[in-house]
Image (cartoon, rainbow, N blue to C red; front, side, top):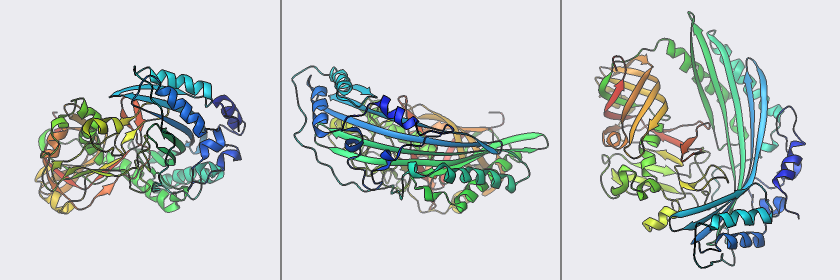
Length: 508
């Protein structure tokens, strides 16, 4: 079969579009969702012989290691605004990224054209990082059998627009029915189907099919001439059957409740005080303020506060932190990472002791440990970095009620947004979008327009109670940024008490 160029592929794909939405030809639907092996060979002519030739070029100047990352991603969006679907569009990404590694240095090239000449040119660009004797790839590759953490009954490209439209329309209608104060609804259904092929000079050849989708609702309410806005989303690496009428009901109820409570919310007093972080979505603080500091590249480069803390106490004995790529259907889960390493459950903090970083192959080689399956990239145009997957704190011994009762005066944080973090120092600031006052051990008035500020390592050390109500963030729309790249991540935690944080409320 002839190797297809990106230009001819996009031309053939766009011939099936209508009304701005991608409808791909049947040829792209031949591979089974459960068995994607051979997709790039059958559809784009990527043979073992071609891969060996490209890898040999990438190693021609003495690189220690090289890999090829082929990607074919199809994204679709259906957007409802002002009571009607006014946008439906899609995009296609097709290409290969070629990496050469020499020590801890990386040479990188990529091309959108999947033919030999373009790939060899990109490989030669990657090879320039090295300067030494020629090495070659292995004679044969092994293809391991990875666990599938996101099974599909059918591909998203097989779901017609006629099945997607009722979802956003029903979300719109239900939000309006829930409250007469709702004056505007935006609903978005996004789905992504990403196929990858990773071929490495040390013998791995791995393919994966990675779905991702979400249904998002944003609502605007009006009361006495004043307007407020809030939203919510549900999703992950889910089958289309996940989006049931019950799921849409739950999503709309949460979005409407979040906007209506803002009319009663007030700004709390400013100062140092106890802060209770509610379960689930507040795990974003754990991810941002603490998790990034445990990514191995920041420690290898001595940027992170945790760079010298392996084996040392960083939290109380009832506190552990886990980064886990094996949670079925979660947005941060992976069968394999973007280096072809099988995913796993990595304990970062074990009963208060820092026990591991999150590693890609480069950092694992530096620390003389095995990769943890955390090598990730945004797309074939980007190089690999150690990145989080699903990062969470396991449940503890207390009940949520006990945690709240222990606070005489403080705040309860239900959700946060617009965070800023300095990775090296661990300093952070987050906007509290949903929360309540805690007075005499009870939840009282709702709050808004307040920031919480602190230091990640200090916050971790100041966790004095952990409840037994672990929840995971169930959305699919969030992206984590690092080094100019965005990847999908998950997070979660139980209700926890941080004994002191800075609250920027009134007079703050």
